[in-house]
Length: 113
Length: 113
Image (cartoon, rainbow over the protein chains, first blue to last red):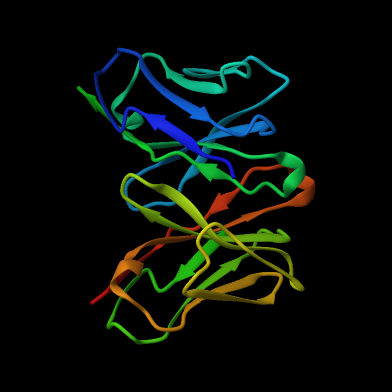
């Protein structure tokens, strides 16, 4: 089955700097790659996603890139703010197979003011 | 009001006890999922259901069972709890017509002594 690895496990950045989280996946059939943000005491919430027919997607300060050949994808957060402090999860799935998500291990991001 | 609710939010139980975690949703979604979250391991799929008559095992179903009582309700049972089932449990929903986004509940923190 699919295996998703996520790095780093923790990331500390200064407010205003950029943060980058990287994930690799094993199943070349995966075609849907969402990113979830989990704030303390809450469930994960989708912040951005990308499909295999797209190389990059942006939404304000966040962007995701996908390299299908290398089977890796990354989340980029620019101009980080304290409210970006959270745990971020990448995931992969085969959309036609019922959206069974395989998650990475998570990255705890701390934005220092 | 929350669209996906989980009860209880916290539970302490003893080894060998049977417990049930409940999930309800008001989103009208047909698909529901149960995950467990452990530090460093991300979220792992326990069971999922695409409609009331459809129940499927996920990655780590051993020791768990589920019941889809109605479109809006999906319960997870631990028949005989053991300490390594101590974890944070999340219910999620998605909609076949709405794409692959999964909406998570707030989680149930379970401690098995």
